[in-house]
Length: 139
Image (cartoon, rainbow, N blue to C red; front, top):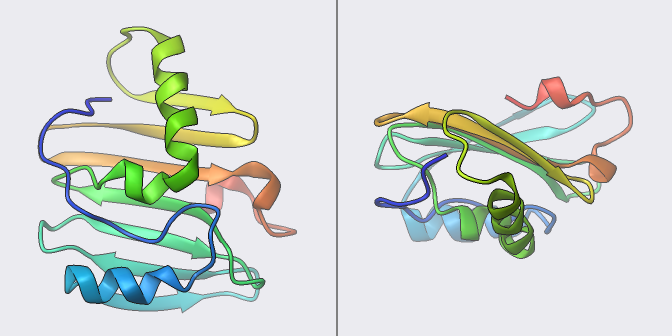
């Protein structure tokens, strides 16, 4: 995955409480749509760049996963929060492999790919997945 280029501020922080969703929505002047099931809620932020960031919030109010899709990569340092350094370390250990990437370390799973103006990805903390939620449900 390409980490260089223009990054836009994005969404709530992985592994933190859902309170930051409203703060980021106001800061970004992003549209917010909330949907959900009994297992989790999805807070969708539509960024002005056209990128959609989804935050998956457990019934306990914790952001256990994030995903993104659109013409730009969101600010992964903000989105991944305290897990960003682990993600950077995973990329260093992976080497210079091109194309889509999937990395996993200590419960953190990050999958990403795409090309100019069509990026996608998701990150989640496996131990934080609510009971009955499969990783495949994070889109």
